[in-house]
Image (cartoon, rainbow, N blue to C red; front, side, top):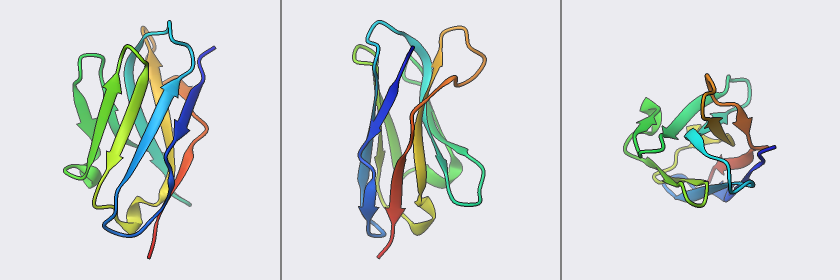
Amino acid sequence: QVQLVESGGGLVQPGGSLRLSCAAIRSDFSFNFMGWFRQAPGKKRELVARIGRAGSTNYADSVKGRFTIFRDNAKNTVDLQMNSLKSEDTAVYYCSAQSLGAMGFNYWGLGTQVTVSS
């Protein structure tokens, strides 16, 4: 079974930066897409960014130009660099991965809290 482990969340002031990291604990497993979702209190979980094996990326409109997703296929890791953070970015951020042949994201991390506040 694949385990996704996130790190890097925390408290940051508006305008600040954070980098989230995620590692898949099963080095022989290959994924199609890897990505980051987030869920704020009272809201649905939403896709923040995803990246394909070849490096194609998609971002939510709300984070374009501020967030960048990176991936290392050899290490099965995916990072999310978040700059110019806003209070509305406050949420639990989840790492996710789609195994080859799966219809959607089928592996999830436990989540890491990101709080943007002065």
